[in-house]
Image 1 (cartoon, rainbow, N blue to C red):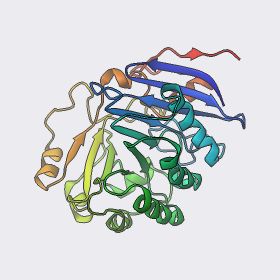
Image 2: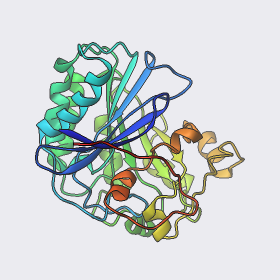
Image 3: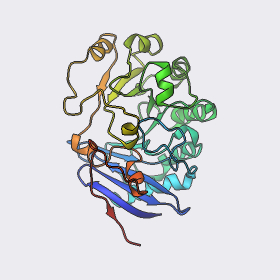
Image 4: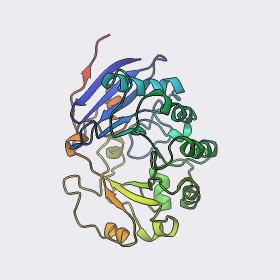
Length: 316
């Protein structure tokens, strides 16, 4: 594996474009969440696909797809990031989160399950907590059934984070934003009832919310028990795809705590609601999946409201 380019800040996040032995390119990331130091929380983000076939309306990882990394290629991304910081594989971070959420839909690659089963034995990392974010594509029952078994065997009692990316409660609009066959809210809720166990972290319902995207609290209440699910609302970042599709963010990252009647209503219903904007400067050094790789692959358009960041090309 060879680093092709990198960008970011040591105290926030560093994004790498790496070329795997197959010659294909992926992004992987290491990040902090200030003000927490690395000993308290350290986050890695790895790619589970070469591009992504889903093509979500705001995601730059879509639009091209060149296959699936093997188990070894996913583990290689993790090991590259780990050994740079902790060559002996002893990771002291109180929370060591590995997010399978950079490029690709993890449920479409069964190798992710093999990686999850191996991770506990690879490092001395008592704070290990994998995180899966999925749009719940249809036809992936084998993945989700095995994921349930792996979570119960290796990551019980709050050592696993699971997220469904929904983005709107309007079914027709959800089909436009996430243009693949996927589980209905009823199917997600039925699986969630089986997935959640006492002591687990709540399952996250994620909304990268566009300004005109409905988020109806009563729809969520109909399907999702607030004792088992939380709601996370994030800004819709100005990616190439978002600009192309004329999507603007509902959340203003500069004013994340602005009054919002829907958030107040959700909290009144008993939901934990997280408005997650992170550190604004952190966004500026690489929060958008696939954007660096798209830039590297000679995207020419300039985003008038987008983030800009220096990319350091590495020599052969």
